View (spheres, one colour):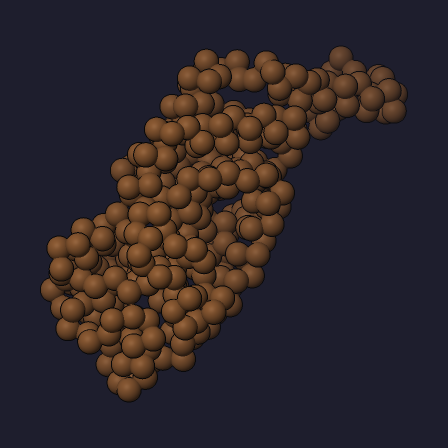
Length: 335
């Protein structure tokens, strides 16, 4: 509208007529008028993290399926930094035409709003939720020197030794840290957080016995469990994982209602036309439902799924409230 008002060709046109003309122009973009014509050029898919991690791997797999389906390239663009905030800001300031999308997760759209003193975007108002994409439950693993066979025994052991158990994490303010903090407050135990620069370094010290426990993704932790170097006693999700169905949830192990699951979803800038959102939602759901996708990611502990845009939007809002309390209770700060 503002651009149209500045057009010299219409400076003498009445304001009401001009406004009507500009409204016609803005509503006749290809994406808004006919989503069947979308896309007619490559689509940029922002991944707000470095290559090779689960977020990147999922994005590339889904982007490949969408490229095949639409006949246009969905190009993965890694914009890592500031816990995902750099990539999210790029998307929040892009045109809502469907040509810039992102994979967001519990950090970028829930935790960071409280963890960082100031964000350049609003995780709700500046985005259009399209669909939930996946969840990645965390396994609670302990060193064999800890004589606990399940979560109840671990809690009892920790209560008898306040401040003596250390729990590792992949870094301050991340899901592995805050899930540990949630366990700490939910169970009423005094355990000490030891942050590391990444999951691999934390697991290395856990296997070596320098720390006693941690929440870790199953892809990296379960091989150590199966080798007898660690013991898995619970999983952070509300339901059991198909990768390790024998592993009970923490909720069923004495802490009813406990659930802390890193999630991933697809978003675009605020204001995307609903017909376009619906089409993207349907095509992404179709992509993740293909058998080869499940076979590829279940083995990594990743549960691919989809949702309606409304369901995903509701999840984001509820997770903002949940993790705000956890971050504040923990006094968590970014490194």
